[in-house]
Image 1 (tube, rainbow, N blue to C red):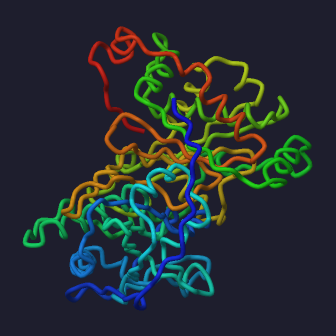
Image 2: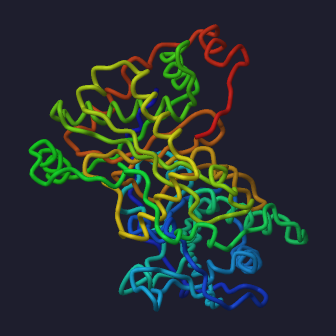
Length: 459
């Protein structure tokens, strides 16, 4: 287990010219794109920000040309968000071909210098993504890109993709399409044809809310335990914590559930991190705590969402228990809660949630919740524009929600990044590391994977 302690301050970027709008290279449909209730949730009104470090530069004019071609297929990303005329709280996309914003900058930094301090993002990293001045979220282009040239000849590529248009799977799908076009400009074959329409996720008439949906149920305002947690989370600055879990660490966690319970790497790690988070905060034993995590529903719906669907095709799974039960029980208990939360999500549950969001524009209950978003099985670390895979793939910022990030060069490892109150950061690291520093024996690895060695499993 490795605890990442270093961060790096990014110098100011120099912009030799104003950013440009990159428009689709040929005509695209002009219409209004309906966004589903899973798309335009209030808690998704931000951009997913990815950061890539490349050893060799990619010619910016080539990137613009390939982006222009990619936007012919992904034309909504060249449009603009707006409020619906029928319901001002409902968002839609004006597919007007206005274009994605691309900025080009220079910074006095080398790739090696960045990599040495790349574990923990800080506020200075925001310099690597051009800031658009807008009155509100709706006024920001759905796709913003900055190419930053480094002193060593390498480059950093940052992308901000509006979450209301794409989820993690959708953003990865778009980025790989763009990279493929740049790497093979004479090839007309796109990896996956994007599916734009969102009407398959429209609410039912009449609405039918048949589940309680605990992910949206908050704590009573007068609950003293809840008020204490709020005070803990808001009373001090947040500190980023970055931990790398190797395949051996993950297998050790999975082994704790065998033979009575088989689980995926995500289930074992999510339960472990949740438990460490709760223990580090030293919360009242009776407080109810939640683990919220994204669950891909593309194949859970009836009919299934079409291949290439790049909109938001996920809902939040919700595991819930008391602090006392979580911290005093064995690993089996937390993993079982995660599995039960996943297994209850079927077509009926998803449709009920869509209907609930039609009736009430609700946000998930984040008051006593750890939120985990997994980026580790999306292939984001394999992005290749023709000059090789990135030296580093990560996020531009560390937030209070928890990210499971891919580890470049190790398909089965996870980098866990989260910001916690400064006073508990060391305790959180301690509880994550506890019991995971022993070397795994070969027979333990084989036992976990049924004698097959390392195995790849998904969320």
